[in-house]
Amino acid sequence: MATDAAVRTFLDGVTHPVRRRDAETLLALMERATGEPARMWGSSIVGFGAYHYKYASGREGDGASD
Image 1 (cartoon, rainbow, N blue to C red):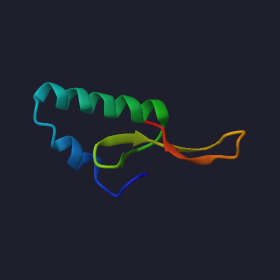
Image 2: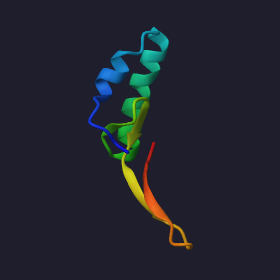
Image 3: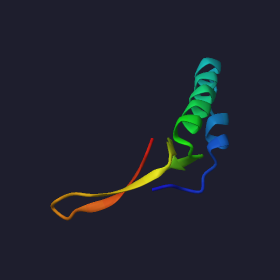
Image 4: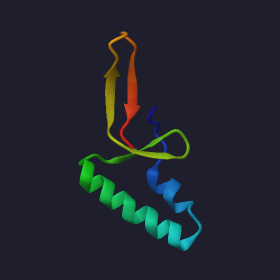
């Protein structure tokens, strides 16, 4: 489930310079590709958008498009 945690705070915590640069690149790419803003899902997943699913069995739920 999406949280109110700040994506920027999470990314600022990436200390390895190459990983941080890669994270910034992926953030821009995914926001452009999905048209959705980044949101934190839990404490360590950056997601872009959400969707609702329903199986033929009747089971349903919500998920992150990450």
